[in-house]
Length: 333
Image (cartoon, rainbow, N blue to C red; front, side):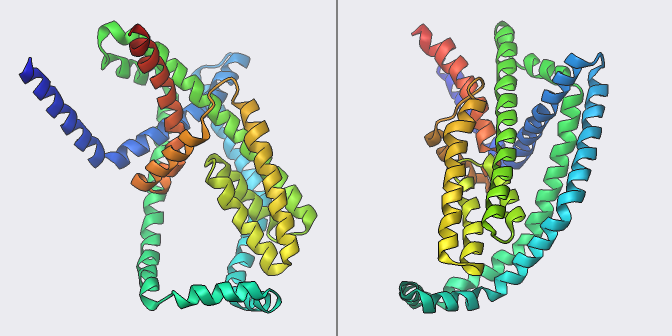
């Protein structure tokens, strides 16, 4: 019995080390599963409306996505590129704008002097090395995204075969239960994706309209970033507020910056306490502490991809933990 326990423990250690070595492969695999679920939700709805098979429904969905995406890009991309160019032109002029602000706000001058007194050349030397790795990181991320999209389409074409493959690796007595668990995970993940997508779209539209009414420059670019960062709750909305505030402060006035801050606070609270709970009430509701801890852990281990995939992973783990750990194990005790 002791030999079996030792062999089992060593096998777990080897599997853990292997999983760590293959962490980027596993990350791409899980990301493709998330995308496959996102593709499967409209396919399921389409098959309920039209008498078509899965392959035809998926082809229709991809055609609609490409057409609508191309139309949306053709309408918004020129404006986004123009505003991105304006932002790039604004960055070199930041010191002059800050100098003007320092003459108007003396407390900012004291803050600048304190920051410069603690700064040294050595603190900025790693910056060049970090910038040199940006190109390689972007190329690697693009390749991973393409591979993830290809795997997602393959998973969405025939999910039953992949489900049977996973069930075959499960002990026979637990296969019926595992089939139910996979269905619940798919439902929770699909509901979370649908709710967050709708929430991101509404945040984008509300931010765009609000910044445009306030007359803040680069409104479309700031709203687009705010909508995308909605998929990173807790951390994303706060980071998305910094860009429009900085633009309002540099190009307009501190009073306008406070108006932008108030607008973003209203939108963030409405999204966090009204919109998201309503959209996710029937699927899964993550505690803010759990969401933040998972983002910090996976962000520290895997960087930006881990940060983006932290919440989908927690959604799946929450369902599995509730059904396996609580119902199947703890309730029997």
